[in-house]
Amino acid sequence: MPDRISDQSPAKAIPSEPTVVLALSGKSGPIAVEIEYQVSHERAREFYNAITPFRRVRQRNGAFNWSISRDVASADVWIERYHLPTWDDYLRQRSRLTEVERGLSGEVEALLDRPPQVRRLLERPVGSVRWRTETPDHGTMMESTIL
Image 1 (tube, rainbow, N blue to C red):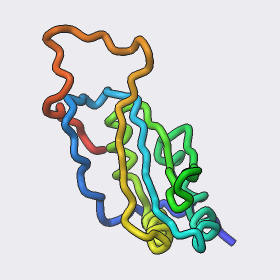
Image 2 (image 1 turned 90 degrees about the vertical axis):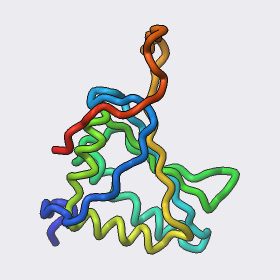
Image 3 (image 1 turned 180 degrees about the horizontal axis):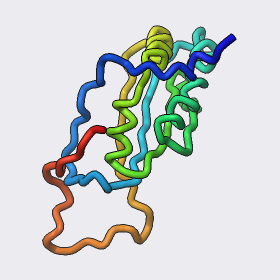
């Protein structure tokens, strides 16, 4: 049986643009993405089996350090987390979904109690930020190109 994820037909629709209030450039990064899913206890195993293929999907699209976690204080909350090197890599990753991957996403979303909540985080490793008085800590995003 052929691997469904290996079908590289591009998806027709690009997801909506993320809200950005930081002054990002295309080289800003690394970017951490957290997606929170709410899944009833009865569907937990089914959800886990549906979300697991996303590791390969995210990696194919440039992500690294993919993980799926379950909240120990709230058993119906799951967090998918992965990283991308730069903001441009994140934007490119969003535009590279295939029809098969979009279908996998639909299978996951059918199991959810509410729409997923997405957080996009600009990571700041210790010592990486060199603040200058004139450097804004927020503002408009610099232009990035979606390839």
